[in-house]
Image (tube, rainbow, N blue to C red):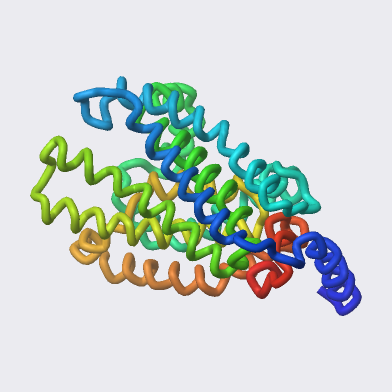
Length: 319
């Protein structure tokens, strides 16, 4: 970006931030309580159905789809009510603040997903080495309608790859970040927002204890690990959302990570080609940190991104 572009972008950014230069008293409390209420509504919707069946049973999944989709569809109302109550008048529309817009859509679909795949370079290489199919066979499977028909008829696949990524990113990123950024700033909001996301996953402990799927200590250790992992992942997708100003990038990254799972380091250490695989693990992490800011540069997605107009101190995260 040349000097003239920089001056114009800075002027444009100051004009957009003018509407939120003064933070209303009590804004942070209203924002935090709104996010907490939204998180409780999302998790609570999973338990409105009385059932003795485990969470992976198709009947349970279908019922939870219904309730969680209703809450997700109503979640923009929380942002609208928060905006109306606090008196904040942002320039962008409500949908734009939530990352639903056309400007920069193609880069938002491609670049964050590629960045996430770079981070998972080691697991992807390991998966390719262990896969019995060749590259051409894999392409044939991907373009086969029967393959996608099987996927779409599998309730667990729909939950993990479609419904959970879409609804969780809509509620915990697209709705919460616009409420947190004006009071906390973009950097703090990135690390605050995932706490609601991580705590929301503690409800799995209830089901594990209920169906006695492990010892009490083992279940709680698993819950602590899951909270840590989901909090870190939530910070990453919050970063992607703020930098790109799009919902689609976090949704695709979430779906991809759900598919890949946590990297199987123990399996990599026991692999016959462990030196090669571990080298790709390290290379992926190094490339990820080298590329994370260039590949999420707001200039690719429409500068400044809508959520960044909600703060008078955007900082380096928004530029």
